[in-house]
Image (tube, rainbow, N blue to C red; front, side, top):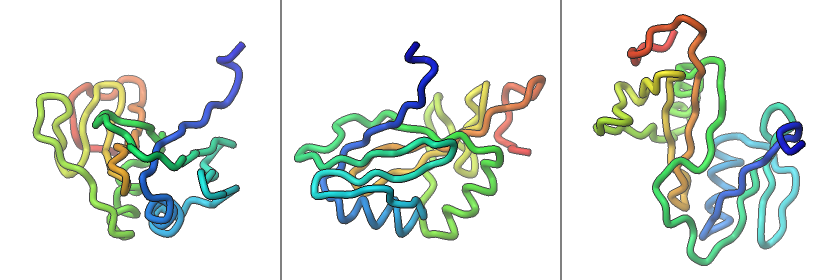
Length: 137
C-alpha cells in the first residue's frame, strides 16, 4: 500500500533563511508553505521537499535526497549558471569527472546546501547503455 503513494524528503536546516535563499532564490524552487519551523517547496510530479529547522542539522555526509532528471548535463549547466558549485569526488565510489559519476545504473552529480545536506541529481541510463562512462548523452 505505501508503495502506491508519493513520498517527500525532509532535510534539516540550521538556518532557515539561508536554506530559503538557496532552495528558492538560487535553485528556483517554488515555496508552497512556510512558517518559523519549516519551508515546503514544490518539485516535479507532485512531489515536495520539506526543509525543517534543526538545532544540530544533519550529522551525516551521505546523500539526503536525489532529483531524477532526463538531462544531467543541462541541469548542471543551469546550476553552474546560478553559481551552485558541483562537487568533485576522487574516491573509488563515487569518482567524478567534470562533476559526474558513473553509478552503473545512472549518471550522478552532487551539490551541497547551506546546512551541509548532500543533494544528488541523477540521470538514469537507457537500457543497454555502457556501464562505465562519465559521458552523458
